[in-house]
Image (tube, rainbow over all chains, first blue to last red; front, side, top):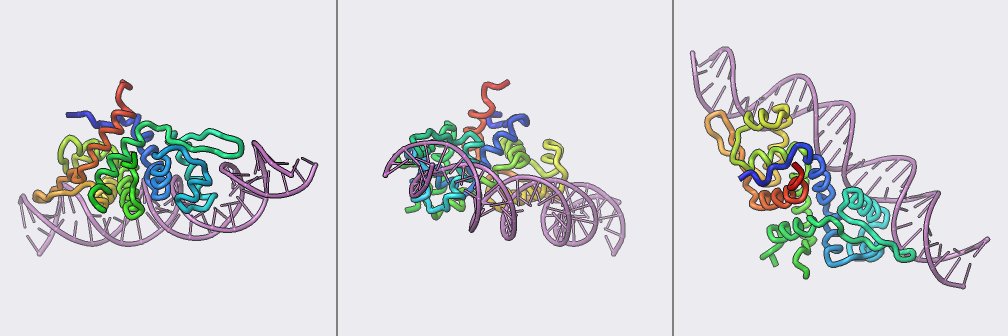
Length: 101
Length: 101
DNA sequence: TTCACATTTCATGTTTTTCTTATATTATAG
DNA sequence: CTATAATATAAGAAAAACATGAAATGTGAA
């Protein structure tokens, strides 16, 4: 059973992806986006983060290829692009949150 | 579909867990341990990390509850304890490594 | 054009991570 | 008890992440 061996070539990419996820604010952002796309103002309202901070977190998520956005007039709608995000979030939810309230 | 909403109370714990994983050296350590327990010397040989660095990474993994060890004479055998680790590694492998060599 | 809105970028300070070197602990052998 | 092997802890500096406030960008409205 050798299925989960990550190749050395890929290790940096995987670590970068995980770093993208490994922050409380970004996890909340991804939870919000897992329900569907949201614009920055909506995310700020939902999570209670200063606009500047929100923008930087979104930028980091975008750099890692985890989210992308589409523009509609002045408004940017962010959405999850990385297909593995929902899988991982589901696994995490199942372990950390299920059966706790 | 609200399955992957992580509660605010748990967000710090989840982020901490992900930070434990989000490092190239620690991913390689976990890959090695996913094949079964290994002692520190074996891990050093397998991954090529200075002993001090290895010890510190193992310590961090232990702090996050991701690994534990058992002692046998002078030798400490580390193993993965956190049940969600293998699930996550499998998801990551499937996305980042499968079909690439 | 001028103004306001939505969002980003820049600059800066603080905290966290990571690496490195040196020292310490623990267990076994002699 | 002394020496050595296996591993951990301490302490330092360098690098990355994070938060904050000020200024800038791009878009649409008047």
